Image: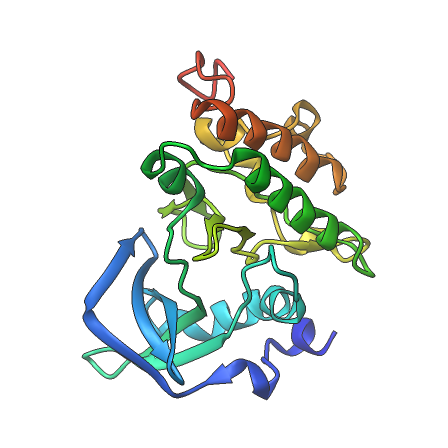
Length: 252
């Protein structure tokens, strides 16, 4: 409640000693660049946002609650959040970054494409174990955006598009980990505060959305994660997108 109402992070979520080399960018999207860095000797991924300084307070308030949820999760198949880093841009403007462990094997699709004989059964089991952990928390945590495709979505508060990568990664020990909990939900919480990314009009993301989610009044439930997980199984097994014959959100 404190995080939701005040927009302030618990002090333990703030980290200061992140070593970041500008030449180590490993990914980029419409709202953030991802860099390889180090935190107290640990290799980490630093997702550095590109919001203007005037946006920082609003972004902090908007995502404080969800990041607190992410930070308290602890499971081998959940990508942990190490903390939030407030750095400076070359113009000395505050820059918000999210820090998590670096996944050496990349995202799930990248891993599958780079390995001739991946253990697909184990990867699927890892994902369902991670979801089971989320869904058995008290209160239940609903991820709301399980997918294995790179897509684009529209930022509701800025009316602009961002590039969003998949949110299932593979660790150095070949274990699948679910990450990116920025738009997760706690069951029975104030669902009007957030709009699920599963409701985007982008065709690729809609591939992972249950039919009932097309309604504006679709209830928040664990079933949306289970449906998306079923779509994920299909892609892990075939490397084809769910409903691959449909090319637009209209046809979907």
